Length: 431
Image (cartoon, rainbow, N blue to C red; front, top):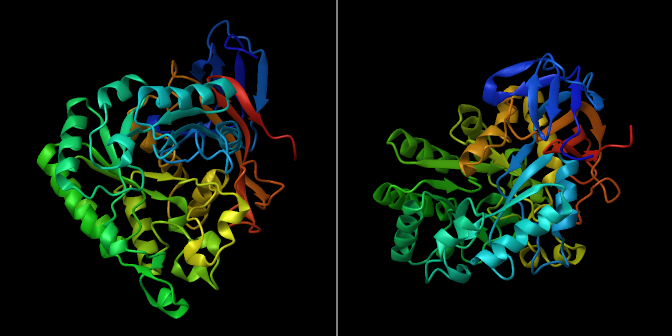
């Protein structure tokens, strides 16, 4: 309806962790921004009223890692389709890793991704710039140009840097431009050809394992380089309890480090592989029950500042080969919010904390001004029914990827409306 549309969202429970708000009150939007929280401003007259009675109103969700597959992998998914799925999931801002084809290592590719998303208008997409050219780990990318082109962070996606001297220089260069570096800690030699956690399940099934040390050895190296260079570093997708302990110790020593966890790691373990369920083939692998408990504790404590979807949609054929040969990853945009609400139901997190981990926390890591509902802020808003039950299936998922181990499982929590810059970009039609 345009930026001049005035909207009032009434009677909802407003949860805005950034401002410590958790109460039933109205939210008013004008010119694409938050006009007021509570009573409407003097002279304000809404063109559109959304009745959020019985619903929760919160900032639009911010996802630190979602592969949209375009450019280069359109046979799996497209930016148009996956941003529509994001809108249906209440996600208004996504950060996509640079491992597209071509790699996001030039301003042209970064602008292509952002502009394609802007053209479809369903969600804001922030491309992470490649730390090295072509993600080959040899030559540092032009980070200043990438930052100017709209890349808020630098990343090496899932590809470990083998040369620690190159990594050190890349981190120093990023620090010069005030850029946070996203890394997923993994020692590629210790991972070898592994596809599951090195433990009793992998042994029983005869699968090559990935030891805990593949994560912790790399984490120790990366923390040492962060301490040496003073670089702000963010660890993507921690999966082991020992890694969370190492992170907490580093933060206490003053190292500028943060980390997130993928939502599925907070629920699934190595045991869920069952009899070679390829939808449970993920990297890093599903770990032990003890690791899962430690991740939950670190999330509640705040050592893990964010939860992300780690969305990786695949075509059906990618999951049909023998387990080690299948493509790793889960289609996860639309299960992010329901899984966070399950943590609330299981009393792992209070609702405001759960919402903070998918709004304010990731926004602060990216250094962007979203994830909050202060007056004057851009009106990115998610309105959801915490009690609505639904079952992920080919007919209910908007994403092109149906590769999720939660397929056929009843989930609770569904989005009613998503607003991006004050415009409704998703409205659920079914009851």
